[in-house]
Image (tube, rainbow, N blue to C red; front, side, top):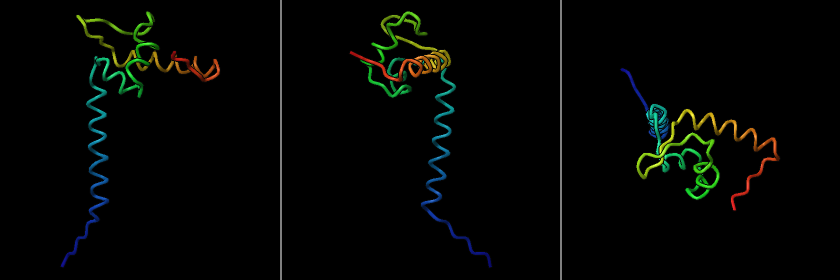
Length: 96
């Protein structure tokens, strides 16, 4: 006779991890993102994102009608360069 025992908590943890991985993959496949997704991606509020990035002429953004859109990969590259510059300058950003 074969006896199988499952730890429900461990099974739930594995399931949730797989769901998280798939959601991340779907997000990565999104070529263009809107400002709401940009704020979520950067973990910053809309006013902070506007002050630091959206109105910066060097930031990879485009306006389509009334909506701002961003190329996800270009944003990642820009943020990587920006964060290196911030750290070189002392690691602090003012958002007044």
